[in-house]
Amino acid sequence: MIELPTLGWQSIVIFVVFALSLLIATYCTYAERVIAAFLQDRVGPDRAGPYGLAQPLADAVKMFTKEEFFPGGANKALFVFGPCLAMITALMSSAVIPFGNHISFGNNAFFLQGIEVNIGMLWVFGVVSLGVYGVMIGGWASNNKFSLLGAIRAASQNISYELAMGLSLIAVLMISGTLSLREITLQQSSEGAFVWQDIFNWNIMKQPLGFIIFLVCAFAETNRTPFDLPECETELVGGYHTEYSSMKLGLYLFSEYVNIFVVSAVMSVLYFGGFNFPFQYELRDWLASSQGWELASAQNLITALGTVLLFGKIFAFIFFFMWIRWTLPRFRYDQLMRLGWTILIPLAVINILITGGLITFGVIK
Amino acid sequence: MQPLTNRAKKLEKKPMTLAERAYLPAIFQGLSITMRHFFMKKATVRYPEEVRPFSPIFRGLHVLKRDEQGRERCTACGLCAVACPAEAITMVAGERKKGEEGLYREEKYAISYEVNMLRCIFCGLCEEACPKAAVYLQADKMAPPRFERDEFIYGKDRLVEPVDPTKRSERGIQLTPEQAEALRNKMVQQPA
Image 1 (tube, rainbow over the protein chains, first blue to last red):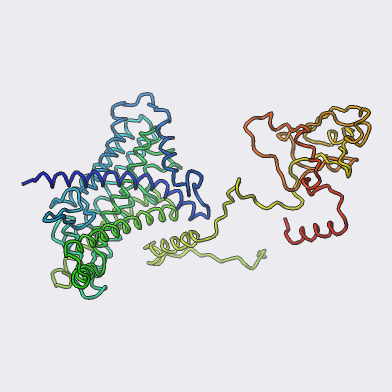
Image 2 (image 1 turned 180 degrees about the vertical axis):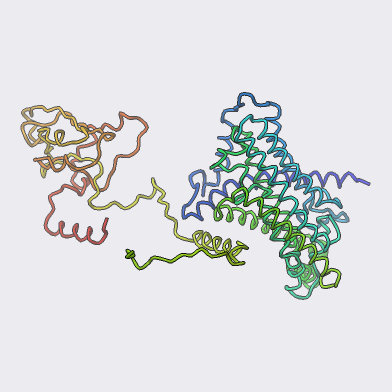
């Protein structure tokens, strides 16, 4: 049964998450340039506004005022549809991510999450794998060999790495026994006695190999270096977005950053405890018992802190993505395929077997 | 063969170890290198606000000198224009009239003197050719960027140095022995 306040709250959350993902993606462009500069002993954009913080704004103005170009022989409808699809799928997947525990006003408790569904992880995976259609359609509709090659690469790469990603995820699902991201997060919390116990409850401690596989696949799924073959400028001019200009190109670049944000959020939730942090229950109980707070408001404070910390984890991952980008060179295409099919997938299967054995003998869970 | 240095490193092709094939240790090594650079001092010079230090023997923007009484030294002999390999200097000579003795040192002076900074290669041959010690390349200034080509043709309005001696460039001034010694020390301390 759906109550109107819940629906209203959900739409507010979804709107906020939508705005936040756009804002974060905007500033990712800035962060990417600054981090790249710092890793190369430069200072990066620092002219627009204090510390160059208005640079994304200037970039957006530039993007919007560029010429809207349609290549000859391009399929116009699909040419426009490609970037739209890429953007839509990138934005849709953040709806099920729990950005915090519940917040209570009076008797009503609200989740800091767009939609709480019991198939959250499946939703993320389904939508993310739809994202490759945006790239493929755009690359094909451009009527350009380089674009087509980029699109083909994107498709084969995403399909290959989705397998290993899904397999590494299955091990997590075996431990948690649920697909709901909120449930998975809550299982990683503990009313434990030590800080150790809190951190040890995070899935990274139970699934270190699975996390590494997931991380590598996440790089491939978001088309980031060292797996950015679909848009590798040295071989394919610009890859699938060679023919794109103006805001249609902007949408592609934007969707890439939104994808990074989403996949960072998913990794934080799945492996790094989501909105949990050490001593959260101790802090709540201490506030409630000896500081005279109401239990509900103490819980609200914990929730807010957890949300802030979750975003901290997400930003750390985004930084890691950029750090890797400016450290590692691009893989060759056959190396990429060999890594995916002959190393990551067998490793993921072995990981499933080990996890199954550990669960059977009662070592974990 | 005799090696040129003793730094030569003998390489042999051997199968990669497990750690090398796993690639992860190498990645962490690379990540630590880039992270070290993250905290290093940045090489960027934020140009308009911050100017790279010039060498004391830098050859920059031209200046037409005045003598001790503030008169223009140039006598429009044209030797600088002849010496100029880029043909960047043009001038028109004129005769000094009565009452202008405070302005020009010789009876003949340059009515106009133009240096095209787009042609100039800043070799300093004009400076060497000048018999009157009138033209010098300043060590502390260079031709700033402009939007229009004609703005790079510097006339006398921008070349002749100010009458006020305190506002003049250091270069080309007749130095006292102490000043020359100080300048020489400065050059020794900051090699170019």
